[in-house]
Structures are given as C-alpha cells and as structure tokens.
Image (cartoon, rainbow, N blue to C red; front, side):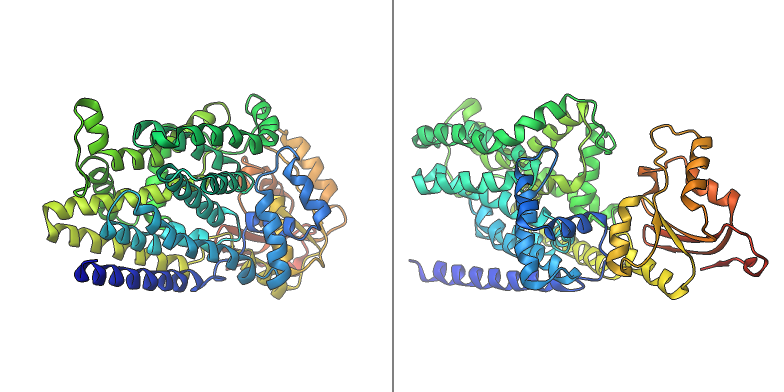
Length: 502
C-alpha cells in the first residue's frame, strides 16, 4: 500500500474514533434535563409488564413497537427505569449510528465525504434529540441503517449469511416500528436503478424478498384492514409540500426551526447541490444515453430515492389515514445527511473556500440548536408541574387534560392523590352534557387541580376549562413547557378570594 495513502487512512480512522467519542459526549450531556413526556411514559409502562403481558403484543392488532418494549423490559431490569436509565438505551443506539453512517457513506462516496457525513450525524440536533428520548426511534434509526448497509454489501458479495443477516435485521425493525417496512420499496428500487451492476445477486435477491414477506404477514393481517377503515389516528393531514417543509426544518434545526432563515437556506442549497451537482471522480462511465446518466448520477439518484421514496409513501397512506409525524421518518435522516455531504463535496470541487464557509455555518447551527435543546425545557414539563402541586399541598382532586398525561404526573408525584377523568368532548359532546359530567366528577370536592397538556387532543373547544371558569374561583396558575396547572376553588370561600398567578 502507498505509505501516504496508509497514513491518510490511519488519520481518518483516528478522526472517526474521535467523532464517536464526541457523539457520546453530546448525547449523554443533559440526558435527563428534559422531563419525560407521555410517549416515554407509555414505553416505561409497557416495559414494566411481565413477559406474559409483552409477548402477545407481537400478534395483537394495533400495537406498534413490541420488540422495543421487550428490549426495554430487560434493559430496565438491569439499570432501572429512571429518566437516565431509560434514555441511555437510546443513547447507545444513537452513538452506534455514527460509525454506521460512515460505513454506509463509503458505499456511495469517498473517505472525505463519508467523514463529513459522520460529523453531520454526530452533531445533528434531530438525531441527538431522539438519542435522548426513551422511545424506539434511535433503535429504529440504527436498524434501518444496518439493514441498508448489509443489503448493499449483500448485493456486492452475494453470500447466504449476508442475506440472512439482512432478513433478520429487517424483520426486527418491523417489530420496532411499523413504518420501517417503507424501506423495503427503496431497497427494491435501488436494485432496479443500479441494474445490471448487481445482476450476479439476482437469484438470492428474489429469494430474500419472497422470504421478507413472511415476518410482515402478522402485521399486514390487521394493518391492511385498518388502512381501509374509518379509524381516526389523531394525526393531522398535511399536503406533500407541507410534509417536505416540516421534515426540512426538523432534520436541519429541530428544536429551533425558525430562528434564522440563513441556515435553512444553506441546508436547501447543499441538499440540491448533493442531488444535482455531485458526481464521484473515482469511477469511469462507458455507457451512453439514459444508462450513462444513471451511472454518472448513481450515488445522488440512490440517495434521493432513499430520502424521498418513504416520504412519498407516507403521504400516500395519509391520503386515506393521516399518519405523518417527523419522527416516524427518522429512517431517512441518513440519506439527508449523506446528500448534504455530497453537496459539500460538490461545492468543494468548485470552490474550497465556499465549501469551508458552508460547512462552518452548518456546524455552528447544529451546535447552537443542540445547546438550546440541552438548556431549554421543550418537552411537556410534568416534572415541574408535579413539584409545583406538591409544594402547594392543597387540593383534593386532580383532573388531567389530556388524561394520558396522568401517568407521567404519577411518575414524578407518586400515586397518592384522587383523580377524575374529564369528559372527552372532541366527539361533538354538547356543552350541557359536559356540564353534567363535570358536576358528577367534581361532586364533594372543594378544591380541584386542573393539569392541561395537549388539550386540543381531548377538548379542542375548551369546554372543560370554560366549566371551571364559570363554576369556580382560580386560586393559582402556573405555566411550564407544554403544561399549564390551575387550582380552582369550587366552593368560593372568602379566605381564598385572592388569585395568585406565577
């Protein structure tokens, strides 16, 4: 081997190790700063079940992520179900994704471009956020990247053990999150647009995709009928351009989507440069016509399919049943980062100074948003809400809008309080019926706490709060991140006439 090339490879490996260490530091810093929110509490609640309560979830209709809950079950037996312990599992997955994006990048670009993508992955606010959340998304990211990488290697070197590994990873990912199956159409299209590059793998490819349908059958048995049913998911419908806009801001700036148009404009510029200007300089093309274009742009076409095909499929499904939210598409973030890296390489081929300036702005933007995420309460702050109620010490009944927040409140406050569920009004419940339900729920109670978070999912017309305003005196009110806390006196005694607002 050329000594200079060997030294460069050693330097790249050292840099990769440093990036992994940096990724760990960025993800463990302030790991438990944000309060748990209801989705994380759901994961903890499932993980607390014994195996007889967890294993049936693999075949029970309507359950997403049973494999993650099973893994979390054993994980929390080892480390406990504290905020830090639950989220550390996601941290491990998020850190492992960093060297994996380097390996994935090497399938489409050179050393330098892959290292740039790895640095973008290391500092990505979106990926750091979900590496610090006690849900399945960091594991979903890791499995999706692993399946794509193993798939590409299996196409290059058709070996049975590689195809078995691919099938096992894809099967696991389907039981970590339902929408991981949307990577399969990308994998199919990738084989077709690169034909005849991988024709030696055709037989094993056909067998693998026939077998891949088997682990999906139990899911398809209830997913397909559900898709054509009138079931309401609770997700808002977004038009395609709105979906793309949300993903652009989420993948780029996450917790600070509108703090400046300069970074987002730069992200768009680099994305377009990666899609339309990037070409590898270490390959030769001998074909003509359309085949020549496909071969010249094979990397950018493949990565564009990786990024956009699952997004379009989610949009098409949402035409009948809205399911879109940005975190469900964490599987395409590697493609986004790799295309940004391709864009930086394409700019560097034309102007080294401009490429360095672009890279610097992207890194500064990433670090700024990561710092913001680590020092500003963003998730529903039930931790502070519970402490506020505990310190006050009054009130003999708790009501939660939405009731799903009660589990998180119990996590921080403890179970020693009486509670009642407010009526669900989004189904068209009349105000008179709401009044009767509230009278019954609060009967015999003098002071009632109302904890409000994501009220629009339960009572979008505000009828419950309207009832409190007309039937009681507001004694205390405090607002935390995504959680409002009110203490009402329903007896209106004179000694509670003053209202304290903080």
